[in-house]
Image 1 (tube, rainbow, N blue to C red):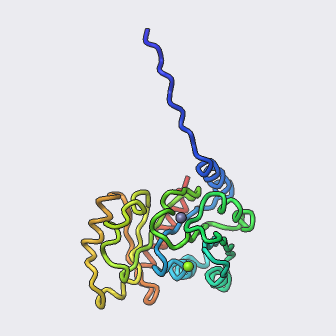
Image 2 (cartoon, rainbow, N blue to C red):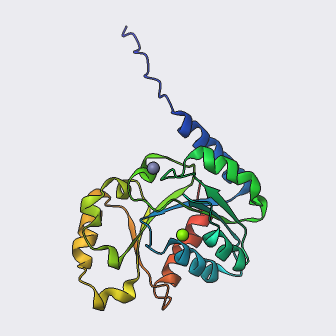
Length: 220
Ligand code: MG
Ligand code: ZN
């Protein structure tokens, strides 16, 4: 009789353990957690504000704003739009981690929310290495950043569920090959869902909001 080989135990890092606890808290409250990553200036906060409009009045959103400096500019904009927001000052650290999100969650009325959007620190490198416990990961790229980003920063695109190409209204004015860009991302992540958005014109927001509604329905 063959002896059963001991199964290798998976050792979760401290961050991953806490991320799992964050996930349980969101699940218990029936909240879909979304981690939004992007480089600085891609339009994260503007997309979030337009998303609030697109989902109103049927869904309630909360926002966690990650910033490296103690400025509340982005959180203030969310609060002005009528949704609860918590500012995390990372003290210079260039990404959010599960500990920071764990500290922010008790400051939000989770039981009243349908969707929690976490705006990560603007950075295309290390946010990919720290799971937060959110259900979906999204990267926002923007036309002015150039079409070569997936080739230069591959890791950030690998684990994501959706890719937003923002500022699509600038396409006529900037050299940007959408096919080259898309090909780079599909090579890294064939299953990713693409959205093209413009916060100026509102283009693409019905499709993006539709996807979010679908994710809120089945997010476990
Ligand atoms: Mg912002
Ligand atoms: Zn970092």
